[in-house]
Image (cartoon, rainbow, N blue to C red):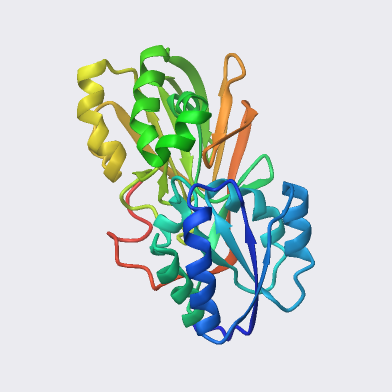
Length: 302
């Protein structure tokens, strides 16, 4: 499906990792395609959402990372037209899932081409998100990943944050209700994915797609350092259904409880505590994106 674009409103996060280098050439590429570009740098999440809702006939383009996309999601749900992405963050997992190039000039060309894709949103206690909500090890990684080291190293900080989090992490007991099926486990991590990628390029499941109408759920049992080394490729490429340390399911609705409240990592940001309910909202928003590559069979095995 091709969408004609005339005027665009580029909303930029000044604090995103690549904002200083990638925005200007991307704007030039949009203007070379005959588009009228207006730039704005919202001062807050509320300001970002207000500008999206007040964008009139302009096409909204978000220049930032997954935090920016997550912050914008409630306002994007009310748009009746597609939005664009210029990936300028640290991880850019939504762009990775949608196969939008990390080179912002190429990403601008995707927008100018006008091809769109309708995708799902996840809802955690009614709040929308794009990628993955998780508890356990990934929440510890998110906590370690903040600060000066993140600004200095960018995505290269993830392995160091993951190692430090693993050293400090302790297993916990969780109860999941997956489409009505209760599951109790001793876990290192529980993740519920709407999209395909999270955490700087990890894959929630090799069969996951952001437009298949399903959540992918996995929990990771306690494992020592050697076992974790074996699990790392599975986390990276979504092969957890083949790993004895993990269990993978798909669902429309997941309830997640723990004995004591635990922080929830939502698209790379700590946002809320357990217990939570996660649901999928199929086809909730439309985005400029290239046609998806065939990755396995959609709606794969439970």
